[in-house]
Length: 433
Image (cartoon, rainbow, N blue to C red):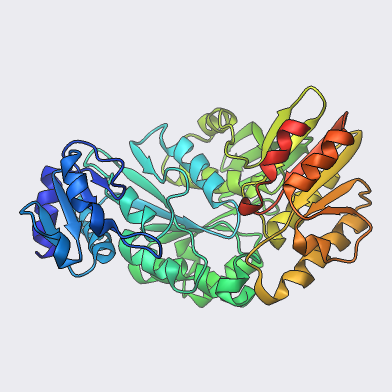
């Protein structure tokens, strides 16, 4: 069955699932395959649970008139999402970057939702499966969609752009992350710049941090002209949107200026690095006609979740929990920001940064050196990579070892930064602080 015919079925049953355990009535089940699972095997079970149709790519499981056999289920899902996106013609903002893309996406959605019916990526559905699933949630009522795009290998952003076809693009920043997959920092830049390449070809516009020389070079290399760039800055008052940080102790406070409008924003975000994310959201809102004065209060209401730049107070300590992920760029930024915060006694609990390939040892040592440069003394390092560094800090192989230590050596009356790669599960330490 060709994609146009499948689209006609989708229009009758516009609800998609890829999980045979979650089968809403009259949905379509796409039988995806992976290294450790084969969705084809569950096609009939999905129909029995309430799905109207199932899409498979193995003939032996297509023994039902409501089971659609295709050559490749994933490619069919992606083509269906692209066809749906083009049919509706919704304005789409694509967002990627090494750090901050999820926070920026949430902030942009908060701003745009004040004026428009806005669809945006939920959670972390930002890959080759998550992007089409998000697009297939679009309805004729949606006016704008904010689509997050993640990648850990070359050409993934180009593939996601081919599916979502964004009209506007944002790269929050580029840094040393997923070096195992990208090969080098230059590989990260080339891969993230694929969204700029797409926007250039489409004749769209890019929201860009004017203070980031890497992004400006990438935009220039993509052929984007000044007319295609909407600039925001923390240093240049002549940018479309200009911001000035007024405090980071511990919450980010920032004044935002655009044309003749001005608003202060007292955020619930921790970290000066979030100022760029705030400015990106203001730039998007300003471009789409949302009042700058209204955006300040809107963004003040945003409270980060899921261990991203969160602030919490326990009976014993004040915590900055930034443990959703970590790479050399975000770790260094977090440490520098932590050094700026005015507080009494401070402590840091840092977990390994993963997926760094051959440069892992060097990058972990750089973080240790940075800790020493900033004069931190009470530091607890977790993971085999940090254990291999030249350091006088206390090290542990895993969070469980650290937790055992904390049970006997209680930390109290401190401001504590907790950060590490997602799979290090550094958030486990919170209940013992």
